[in-house]
Structure formats: structure tokens, C-alpha cells
Image: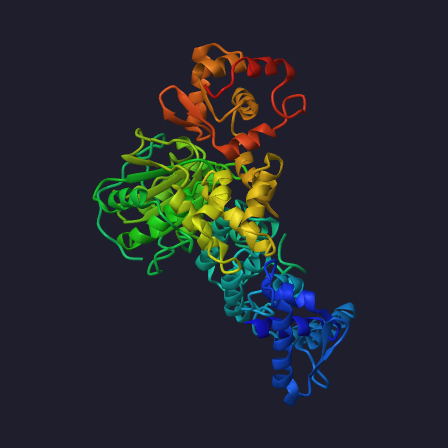
Length: 613
């Protein structure tokens, strides 16, 4: 590997001098051996002998080396030449010629530059070039989509998205190509998987490009022209259906035969490749999901970022074969930043489209949509995942009617729904430390040597073992190859940097907590701000009453309501605890006057009795 790193460094210098110090840094990073300089000189000597037949020459230049490749050409130079020609063609409106040059440029690549070379310095050096390749691919594909080459692009885009699942522009192109090729169900599945990947890995909702393609699919606008850039079956008998609460049972279910003979709908997202732990919860959900029973509903709740959707999808895939008539996944946008929760009408329309019905066949009224949904699910064995519910009322009309159907619901609020259907509730806490460590190591990848538990302990402490935060911390290290574990732990120890370092380009922990905070009433928001700036993470009714200036019974009601929202834990009756990251977030929230934390008159209460009682 040492010789590969030295050669890679010399090649990427493009005939310019590379100092011995830079070569040492590329090979060993911040911990070079005392013989580093000698080892570099020996490696250069070996490379000279290896390269001699090709005419390439390595010459010593001012405490460094320079590689002259002679008459040979670097693929990178050819790539840039084709790219310049493509730009010229575009400037003259010759898009087909530009596509030819873009394709010639891309054909020079077999993968990322210096793939497999384990050097943080070198990888950081070529990151811009690798990003340029992806941008060129996206630009070329946009041009080809505009020429209706969607069918020929499906396989290529599938490979791109498999390699770069978080690259939203490519995912949007893939979804659009599938949609225009007639693979509508697959297009919805890919979109839902992308939404899940963004939520799991980055704590984000889809950006404008993905959302625009999704809206296009929902409109069934298959004749729309491509924009210049990607837009910012088996049955089993069952008992008759039970009427939905609030909907007349006298109307006959509307049964469509539009999909007769079609394969069963399946829009379950792909499983996360990073699922760890949750053994007890998985066992409970699998037992309930495979047990006989009428219209079973399983609910998974927990604070934002705790891994509810990941668990639900993991379980759904393991019981999917028991529900041969369809597996449907729907995001209800209950706690999604910048999006309102889906109403009954919008949610029912999406469920019916995901079940295989053309949107043009759907009625307008909620009652007619409910009857059609009942008809689609009566007498069938279907699995429906209702993700990100804002509350029980939102899902009231969405439960499938078949007695042998299973519904999995996830929500940040504690849901029981006992009046609607037999329900088993599983509440998730942050991961046990050993599982948080396993998740961090799995997400960290190979850029850093496998860390010891004690090396990661500080990072996990500041993340509060919250899966989303652990994932964001690992991603931060992947994006900063020169950072060491201790450096990230030191930064996370600073409350002023903590949320920023767990941030991504589209959001992160702050976006996740924003989505919960905006659903609270003004009194709950005020109490959270006060708790955020109080001493310690624990409180009780008496200290909260003093802090907020509320009667004890009102303080207790508000604390209990925040427990139901999973913004406070209740380790024992009468005692409450705030997750460290939620506390950091709340401490930085502006008060009604625009300042952070509690108002001046409230600080006396804080000093009179700390919340950590």
C-alpha cells in the first residue's frame, strides 16, 4: 500500500513537485515512524525500477520528487479535454454532440479515483475530482432524459444509486427514468427508500428535486418534458371487513379490477445495512406480527432519531412473506420539517396509488376514498406500514379492513389506539452503549482503524447513544479523514459546537428536533426552553413548578405531556430527565423576545432551585 500511496501522490501532482513531507503525511498521517523519510526514498527507488519500461521518470526536485510520464497521457487530462469539448457543443446548442463528449469523458472512469487507497490525505486531495465525475454524469443524464432515453438509462442509474444512495439528484433521475419507463411501482419504491435513507443517515427529508419528481408521479404526468436539470398478488380468504370508525358501514366497498392479475404491490423500502441490536423489541414485534388475530396494529414510538422507522422496516421484511397480497409503506409526514402532516384525503389517495390504482380512478370525497380502500383490503392479507404518524386520529381511517392484515405504525407520540384496533405498543429508548458502539463502528467504515470502546465512549456520551446522532458523528469523521476520534469528542463536548458538528448539508439533529418542537403548544415550548437552560438533565414536579411559575398540578400535567411527546424520559414516577442533545437544542432556542433561554425574570427561579433535584 505504501508504494501505491506514493505513486498516487506523484500522479495527482500532475508533473509538479511533491515534497517528501507531503509523501510522509500521505502514507502515515500524523504518526509517521522515525524512518519515514528513508522508507519514502526506498519506495521511490522501487517505483523507478517498476516504471522504467513505460518511459516514466521520477526525478528528485528540492526535497521532493516529480513524476514525468513522458508521452503517456493521464486519463484525467483526457477527461478534461472531452469535458471542454462538451461545454463548447452546449454553448452552440449542439446537445447530441455534447452527450457524445460527456460519454467519452465518463468512459475513462472505472470507479472513483484512487479507490481502495487508504490515505486520508490523498483521498481528500482527489475528492473534488471524484465529485466532478459525478456532476458530469448527472449533467449528461439530464440531457439524455430530455431526449426520452429513459428506458436505456434505468440500468445505469440503478448502479449509480446503489453506489451513491444519498445523492439526491441521481436518485431523482432514477425515479424519473423508472416512472417514464412504465415501472411506476418500482419508482415509488425507490423514492420511499431514498426518503428512508435520508432520514436514517442524515435526519433529512427529501429535497426539492426528489419532491418534484414525486409530485410528478402522483400527478401521473408521464408526458412532461424533462427539465434542463433534474426537478428541484395472491389472495387468502378472510372474514368480512369491520367498518372504519366515523364512516358509514352501509355503503358497499368499491372494488377496482384495474390490477387484476397484476403482481402484489410492494413499496417497502430496502432494509438498512446498518441495523444493530434491538433484540427484545424485534422479538416482540415478530411474535405479534406472525400471530393470528383480527386487524392487528403494532405501534413503535420514541423520540426523534431513535430508529423507529429502521426497526419497523426491519420487522416488515421479516414478516412480509406472510402477507402475500401486498406490502405498502407510506410516510405520513407527521414530524417532517417544512411539511404538514398528511390529511385523510391525501393519505388515502397515496395508499390507493401505492396499492396499484391509477390516480385517475380515485374519487374526491374522503368517504368514497375510505370505501375504495376498504374494498382494496377486504379479504386480503396485507402489510401496511404507516410511518411518521402525528397521532392516532391521523391513522384512524387508514387501517386496512382485512381481518388478516397487519399494520405497523411509527410515531414520536405515544400511541395506544385501543379504541380502534387491538394494539401492541413498543417504545424505543436510545441504544445501550454496546449497541451504540457497534453502530458507530459499522458506520465509520474503513477510513479509520477499528476504534476501541474507550476511544468512542466520549463521542457516544455526547450523542446520548441516539442512533441518528451516532450516525451523524460517524459521517462527520468520514467527511473529515484528517480528524481523530479524540478531536471529534473534544468538539462535541462544547455545547456551542455539538449540534453543528452533528449537522449535515440538509439538516441533522437540529432539523429532527425542530420537527418535534413545532408541534407543541406555546406553554410546552416555553417549558422546554426553561428546562434547556436549567442546571442538570433531571427535574421533578416541585422544581419545575418553581422554575415555570406554575401550580404543581399544572406543572405535572405539562411534564407528562412532554413525556408523551418523547421529549422527556420518566425514569421513575415523579422524576423526569431530558436527553442531553434535546437539552442542548432547547438551551439554544430563542425566547419570545428573541433571546436564547429563559427570560430575565425566570432566571431567579433557576438559581433558587436547580432542576436536578
